[in-house]
Length: 170
Image 1 (tube, rainbow, N blue to C red):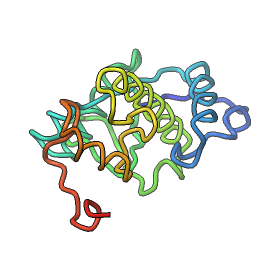
Image 2: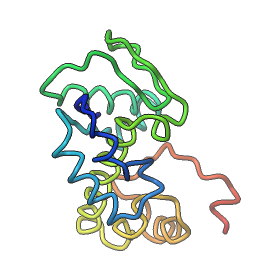
Image 3: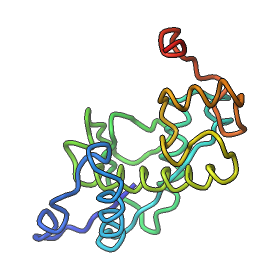
Image 4: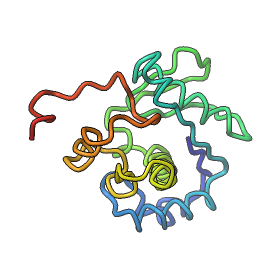
């Protein structure tokens, strides 16, 4: 979650900010630093694998967004959200399809979320060697699937995740 200032030069200052998935790790890291400096407030919320297993991915995503909202030192007036709505939050909200492509604040938040997650997965690489978390960042690459078949699931894997049969046998 990112609250940006209402400034004339904001679009110029953050002209390279876009959907985090379209950026290299180095560019994301550079922009994350700049976003943190420019933002009036920011917060990143997480949900654990066990929470996702217990309540499902969409409720866990909403939980993580609410946690990010709770970290903000100032209260936003309105929430722009990437596709989601938060029924348990009374603030006015606008869910945007492809929000990280359409909103600077959502794109900035996606960069902070992705860099936070990537750093966490690098830490997990140390705790759970052999899975390659630092390389694949938790995405279902062939190397990731092979490591899970070889080592079994670690405590940070979602037990409820279902691979499609074709994905497992590749």
